[in-house]
Image 1: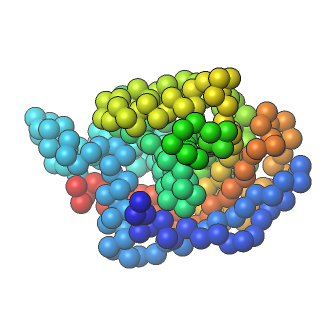
Image 2 (image 1 turned 45 degrees about the vertical axis):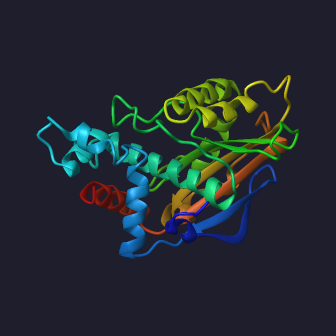
Length: 269
């Protein structure tokens, strides 16, 4: 599996933050810069989450819009009108985390339909943010792993502790897990039945046990990262606390990057 070039911009700092309940949150950094070739490829990869390029001509037909205007006005969250900007930030964070677990950590991370099937472009998708699957062998194994992730972006000043919010929402994922898996399976059935049926490995833990790992991820602008009281985060009440991973991803001028990526994704379609 060849990783998109922008994934190489994600680097492990080797540093950690110790939370209030003595857990370690690992710190990664997104070292993005003005490389037109990489940004263009990233924009294409990003756009596919909302609309496959092969579907775009039929979707644009009869609208009277250009490809760029269709994506900007119909598919992508609004750049200015609330809650569009926060949905943009949240989508960017989720997609970045999905890329991270698929291309850096090696999980299978299907995302088909999560963003392209929205009826309201400005309303975030329901369900668990990101799910990754790891298969130890061809046959079901106790070492097979389901990674369930809650991701929270923080690119503007806020009083909220994004890591704590990710932890709290992660604690609810066990209840939502069955519905999220069923939704992923149903979406995949539209494009690849064999891949869809792979999800079934994780739909009955009682009969076919597997490892379940949760992760809470905060994706933060550097300035927000410096000000946010991340050390106050507390996961002591998490229902899967023994198998909980805490991750922080930081980067400079993150909201500017988000808007620039959406703009490029639209203009280069």
